[in-house]
Length: 227
Image 1 (cartoon, rainbow, N blue to C red):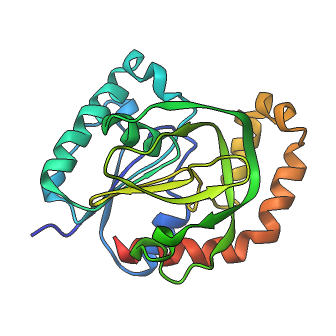
Image 2: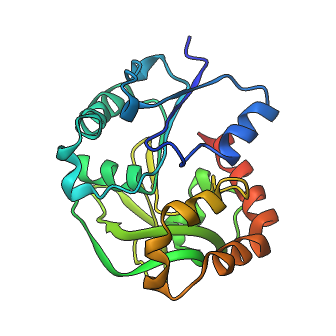
């Protein structure tokens, strides 16, 4: 019987954060694999649920990386075996691309904290049970997934029209519920060249997150139990 949550980490500094914290506190077994470092992807039908994280890559060039191409095709197995699957940021875009949708630039980057609003489908979706209609979340992206045929758009922001979608037993979220105060300073250092694009300093980004950290943690703790 499947009893482990599989977490697919795609970059050294983009860790499971709050998600791993939640699973540890709830004594839920989980395994973290690192395909970019050569780890194999376990059989999806052996997993209780699968959560795939973000990375600084962009989906239009995913075939340039062997691990990213493998993850793209792995989603076919996920779709066939039907464990709950949650893709965050890059992984949400890769999921949409796997389902035949385009991934395109937003035109304006979202870096820092932004409000996301659930639509009617989002308010009725079990992943967002207990969420308010509008909530603040951490973002770091410049691209946006399209909505696959047969999938449901669940949320949007003022800048990015597609923030969350559901396709069968698979969800894609553009935002980072897993963000935690330990790793975000590392993100700000590693991706510092992007901050001028939104006119923010690292200190400003971290101050934004600090203001919503408690609520973001509550929301993050709410989502995994519905997978």
